[in-house]
Image: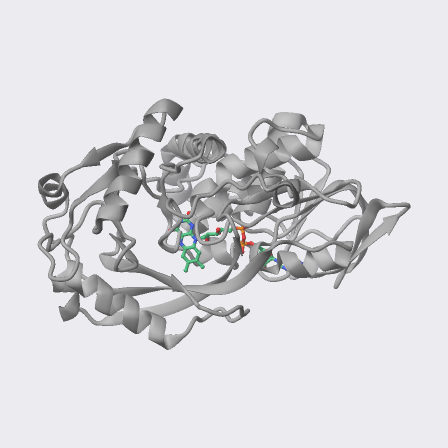
Length: 414
Ligand SMILES: Cc1cc2nc3c(=O)[nH]c(=O)nc-3n(C[C@H](O)[C@H](O)[C@H](O)COP(=O)(O)OP(=O)(O)OC[C@H]3O[C@@H](n4cnc5c(N)ncnc54)[C@H](O)[C@@H]3O)c2cc1C
């Protein structure tokens, strides 16, 4: 595939952009692949990409029931950070964050990674203790974060009201190399790179059944016919329970709607990302000028890609306490995605009871930041049967009580 470059853009400008290749095709499924990944979200596409790049497994299909990136990958608020508490989490999230640093060069696709810095605000004494503890854990893990006081918070984000009224800002956990990236571009960049390796990204192809013989996976049934495979990766976020049911096992998580909204565009007023767990909302400003606001999860399990109205009201009311200037803005759009939340707020990257079938899910409200690292580790797990990055995230941890508790790091809706 022709590389994107300033020179190529200039050349194409002179020939009416007729020389570009399609970024990915519209292939007819083959009868059989070495590996099939179900779900063309960021995690599925990244897993396929690293299967090809790191392990030479390129006879791969990625099957998507809708359009690529149309699930949570294209619906999130794009926050990237790695300031988690437990060692296995810090390892996979920091691997991911560091891969984001040069992902645009790696994929030859501008994913617009913007390491503008992320603060997690402490607005109660409990949070102060929690984040100071995380800062110390991060220092031991080699993840660069620091505890900062309220004056520094105000300096970094002048539009914030740090004095209250209900919840004054007592400080925050600051990660200077955290930030955002363009979510669609992450999916498109991986999809293009997969197609370039000869992989098939097949959209509008819903998996309706998983076929097995003698306890081993043999393929899938889809709306485009039966397709055989040696290895199968299920990477479908909130739909994982359904797919696991087809493969004959159950998963310990809940599917709930998580929602976000954006305001009308305004002039640049905030050049960092702020998460406020106590008042429950998180905020950044997009390149277009919209204030991007993340809300909470619905308090009941559901599969709507909307979320309930009272949550928007709650989120906006809470955020305007800390950001009074928001009260003057009109909100433009709102949407939701179905997230897969585990009891310990950590993901599942695991073999399953069905031989040859692997699962990557449970990223819940915070998996966008993890896409490159998760793909890296999951590809290794699928190719070699084990990976140091995924070792602690197996399904057996729920049976054995080895939880990886990240309820502080993921306390706000991601
Ligand atoms: C509103 C919102 C805000 C968020 N904010 C952040 C954030 O700021 N930072 C962060 O790190 N994370 C955030 N997240 C979480 C993040 O978006 C997800 O964890 C991540 O995108 C999950 O990616 P995925 O590839 O696993 O799933 P998805 O992107 O959902 O992809 C799964 C795909 O599987 C497909 N599929 C399902 N069933 C089938 C089937 N039977 N056959 C074929 N295909 C199927 C779906 O159509 C979908 O495209 C947010 C999520 C939401 C909803």
